[in-house]
Amino acid sequence: MTPCVDFASIGHEPHAAVVDAALLRDLFTREQLRTPMLLLSRSAIAWNYRALKKALPRVKIHYAIKPNNHQAFLDEIYRQGGSFDVCSAGEIKLVTETTGINPATLIHSHPIKSIEEFDFAVANGLETFVVDNADEIQKLKRYTHKKLKILIRFRIVTNTKAVINLQYKFGCTVADVLPLARLIEESGHEFYGLCFHLGSQCIYNENYVKAIEAAHSLITELDMAGFNTRLLDIGGGFPVEYIEPVPAIDEFCQPIAQALDKHIRPGISIVSEPGRFIAATPVTLVTTVVGKAWRDGKVWYYLDDGLYSTFSGMLYDHCQYPVVCNRSGEKLLSVLAGPTCDSFDVLYDGLMIPEHEVGDRIMFAFTGAYCSVSGSNFNALRQAEYTVID
Image 1: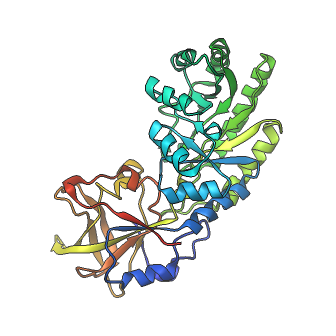
Image 2: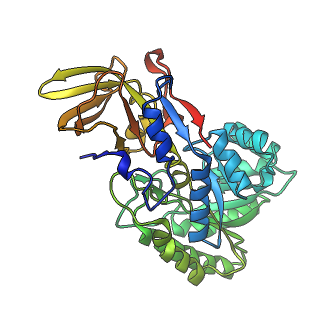
Image 3: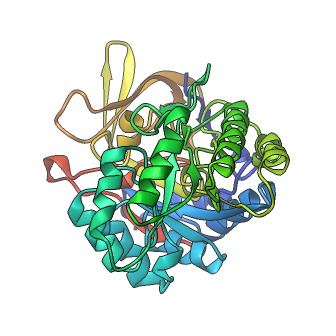
């Protein structure tokens, strides 16, 4: 069951930076605050970036902008010295037009690209791309004016899965890597390296170690065949503590860093594509109770945000976000529902929280990753807007 968090515990999370607790407390009583609202902390973005960089000192961070492409994330990552992972023309435009970054430093990590998407990326200066099959390599032949740097994405077999398994849809087998490298060279472009992505919200660091060991074996095989591996991309997926505990990022990454030092020779550059770990905790959603009813022995609270908007992450990302209340008293069996006319739009059923009234605020922590980006304005309802607080 999802716990209700009070203000006494906000701001004491050991694993990542969060929005300032004093500000949250102030917002509960600020009548003019228009909700739903997403509070975004630049300092929390920077904290998360630096914590991950410290945990993986050999790794260059390419923030994957898909979980949150708000300009504050792009600006802060660029200011911290990071680069970006992009997957579409729209993401390329967002990054290059607003940060001034050299597009040649970007990695286009989508293994399957339409010809139009591919053409746009190449025309706009991207050089590093990912493939995982022979048909994708055929598309390279149309680019004869420049030599592109191509990474091969492989997958491994693991006993445990990430919460969102990204090996299901993408990645060739390890046996396919060398034949694909040969096809890349035949296409007139450069085999540049390897990549893997275990998934999102990976809670088993041993899977990273296993993938790094597989990369080591592949690099040895490629060496013997005359290919020079220049780069290894270890993906992202580093976990965030939503409801269930996870290790602190330095503890989680320690065996990964050790495996990189042991298995990947110094001449090979290493990058990572974190999204969730950087994006989740800097954002807090503020909602208002717009309706209340007693139904079937439970208190139903209807909020001004729901599954079709910010809470879309509960559907697509399988997340439960910590509930933050500012009421005391006996906890009652409660339901939190969204504002749409669809009965599917129920967020939490069986939540134990103190009784609230219409007009009260309820907040939800760690709503920065895969929330607003996948929401809609179903029923033509207003979506949550961002307020950058520092």
